[in-house]
Length: 531
Image (cartoon, rainbow, N blue to C red; front, side, top):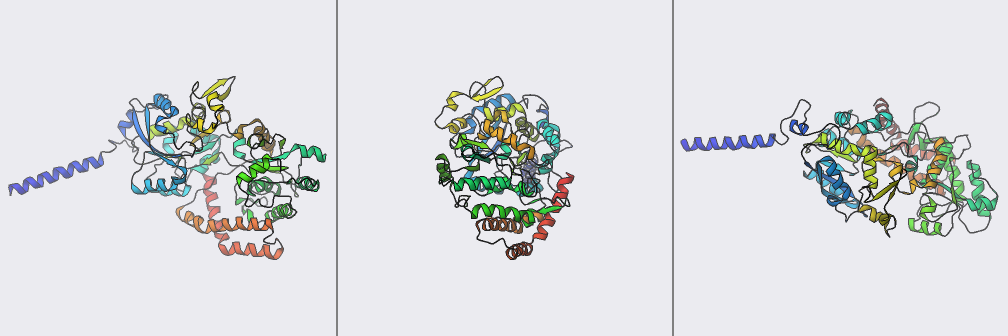
């Protein structure tokens, strides 16, 4: 009997110890659910972020270029550790090709880090794991501990709208493009070979008709030069769609109907059909390179380098294929008087680039750690590295050291000092510290020409409820895929744009569920507008 009592006593002690261990992972919490010991160690302002050093485990994506670089030895992170007293253990450094698989394994297998960095998490997964509690809510943490990001959100309400989910919560800290750095938000832009304008005694085209006339004149010169080419048809569409009054909020499939201010499905409008007729005319008359739907990047670059194109939509030709004769074009005025440039992304580039998990015992310190990169100094550290080691500054201009600038493989050399190469990290991209082709003098001049024609308001991507996500990932994806497939067929002439075929196309959209698609978008837009 005594032996049984002793065994029962030992069992209860073991059970109690186990219970205390299970409940004691984060220590005592305050009324906001924050670990009191972690908050006592936190400096709410200035550096270092914490008084006594802490270690956080991060999961990150890595590009081909930086895949062999161990971020635990990267100079930028060593420097930031000295500044903050936070040691980041880059415990999982995942190649882009296996990012989705490794990220899902981490989330599904319980090997969850303290934070996911540059992990490209979709809005669907942000909401899913946010509702489950795996990704913690950041609203109050950003409000209290992220002054740089908070300021940006206040200056551009569309950023906060795009970060906020249907339950009113924010689950991530995004990748942002500076509002003042328009060039990087345009990406590929229109260029025309100036030598052809001179040969033909023509001015820079300012209307869709004048652009057609230029292409026709190049073709009739019998030179063998292709009037227009690009790496895809999408870039040309992005340039001319604003000439037909389309995509007036920057979004791809929906915009605001100018006649009613209701949501409009762009690809079912009369103006969209008119745009297709214009681009089809260019293609049908062989003013557009005929293999543009399948051309490979290498083939395009080789042809462009040999001077075979008179116009294109691409990145600065002087840097990409030594096209020094190319000058930038602007938005074209269309047949109805519309003149917009809508092929531009909003400042909220990627929502799911930094999330903090419920395994993190120091969320406030982690938010402070990330917020630094939404400020000027942090952007410089992320993109330029350490002064004297990876860059120099003279008269307000920042330049990588000669060892990087003159390296045979420049991006590889950069990746040995800074983490951003090929990754699209969370934080803010600023013009002064970005060295890609979008920051070249010609690209900045091109952006300045285009700027007057950018819509006043550019929407961030909408966020959807669980049921809406289910619909958009199934029926919505099918509708959008059908639109893009039919767009290419209409342009190439594989499908006629006559009344009968156009009505059949519209009926197919209706039968696929376009009405419900627009109902979902309308509800999402109402929430977006009220955020």
